[in-house]
Image 1: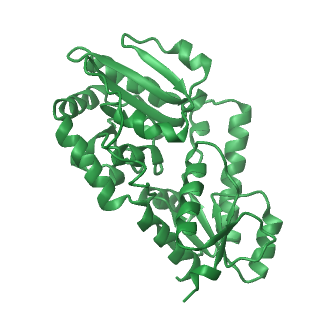
Image 2: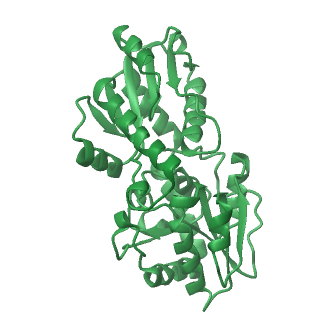
Length: 339
């Protein structure tokens, strides 16, 4: 058994920003520090275990850590794949394939333990790259249920329904889900007054290409502190990522009592139970970025709009029952220091 007050965990890379990796790092560090466990990002310091968030280019440092007998745990997200079915530019494609290579190399050569963020991610990695040599475990992402709550200030419209898209990036090759979301809103607008609000990076070319009969507002990158109010100010969240590995935005929305709609691809159905939103069959091949069944999505979304109170309460219950931050932090500590 370890002594928490004398324990130090190294986390690398030191990811900053508003994306999923940076969000996880911040939440996990806060959880460690609340338990009296010290945190460092310096691979040359003395520490008891190392958590690699996805990958790092400092392989020589990883080798030195391993030779010191320190446990290395790799936390894996999904695999870069969109560039293989949709042209996304030379820079994006090269970076995506290089990223896959580095992640797979660390998984096979350096990791003593592997953590997948969802059952979907685990199946995906094992199908594409084989079963890892190191012991592996699934730990679903968590959210601070006190910071992300259904209670608090909001500006939810009363004269129309708002669909929220909350993504790190919906630019270029990642923009398919944005067009699908707008199509769903247009279908719903035959019965309900609708608007779409997009929080995240959307390139100007995509914005110009998007022609819609319903209002679409682009907020750009939103500060993390503003997300709870933004979620509470919406009626639906649409998960715009195709084959989402384990989207933090979905978990945060549920914690704020915002029902989630989307297509059954990736890990979405692992997170959103039937009463916390509506996840419908894709109706085509998501791996080829084919157009999904828009009509089915709109039909399911209409039920959520009609029964807002019921679905909002269920969304919060789902977060409280399975997606809390404390359980996630404790599970990672066990893998890093005990198992």
